[in-house]
Length: 185
Image (tube, rainbow, N blue to C red):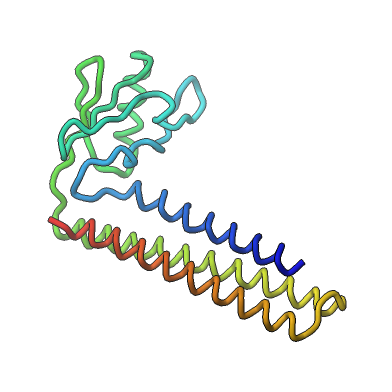
């Protein structure tokens, strides 16, 4: 019972870390990265569709993304989605492909992105702590119902706390790595 609770908390914490990594991949750094636009929502026949389902995204040069739609009729929809997104990029289309040139980041924009990363890292920490709180609450309920002893609850709480500390360390490292990537000129 305690093992199941521990495994559930661990898998939920892994999910929070994975969500953070995906979230941070979409934040722009100095280099072109397909993850910047892959999750971009494009209005396709009235339904929001991720760009990666409508086009292939390549990096022909360090500061250029090349978007090649599978269906040429979606070109305008993809352009519109890029323009309305918060990427701050202007698509260049030749009728077959879209090129996105990534200008170098200004120092002000870098600092703004670092703040955004810090905010997202803090959200992930809160998510991990909420999972810990839920697990500890379940442990207290098990003890109140007489399913586990006080010693077992205390031991399990220590395990959950260690797990929490490990995942928060991992989140901090991911955030630090992303901040360094952004600050790199």
